[in-house]
Length: 341
Image 1 (cartoon, rainbow, N blue to C red):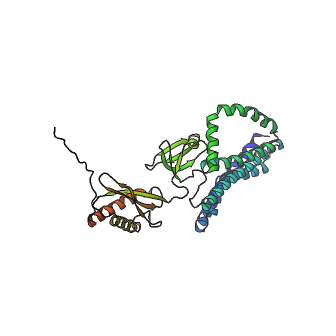
Image 2: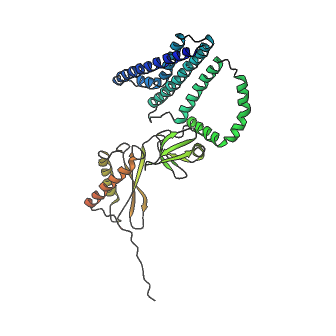
Image 3: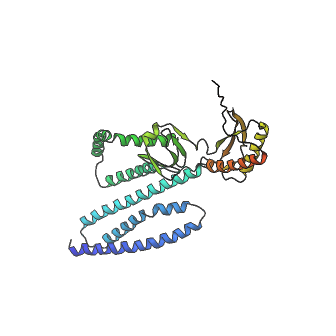
């Protein structure tokens, strides 16, 4: 084929591709405005999933028109058609991976009261499966036999597994965490090694934990799977909050109990996160101290982090009420007897 034929085809390809990109931008802009007005999120997920594959579709259409209008020899046209086929399958594979992962995430978020999210590992698994199917279709369409490839992968798989032993250990530990579901994205957990915080993401190799100080602790999945974990979000986020209080031996225990219950109920109406149901209770525990009568006020908060503000505000209310009621909070005392020689 003469050189001018390839130049003409390339010019047509670039011109149509640029024009289609402009049309794509206009169409997606209009559809985005329309999707924001609807009451469902399905159209937003669909548009987001098709945004990148549409670039491949524009390239495929441009390539088809350039080949159809060119005077290039048939054998070169056949090569172009194979490239066109690869572009179409690749774009469909990318769109399918995006749509499936987003639909699964949306379904899980609606199904779970705790707002479970699809983790980085689960998204990677979904996309890997879809891309593997698309890759096999592309290889088969190009006339390449996959049997020798599978045999080579089987032989080399053992060597790869030995070389990547730690990586595979973290991968399978992450899959075990996803299946057993002891922790979820958004849960507040504490490890036996002392790290605690919100689970930000569970990836294919590590789990990210965001501490209250807004730092990220990165824990290998294998270490997380072997740790003793306290999950403060299971079986539910609501949790009890005990507050220890000591008063003088001169105080009436029934009076102290009534005051504490009144302040806890009154505080539940104004303190964010402090609950009135279940009702607060007071227990004369741990009981008789060296210098005080020790009570425990047990309230409930909506979730783990609510306890800090609730304790802060509730302690202030109790202190002011004790002063008003004349209830003394004693200092530790020791009686020392001096023996005369």
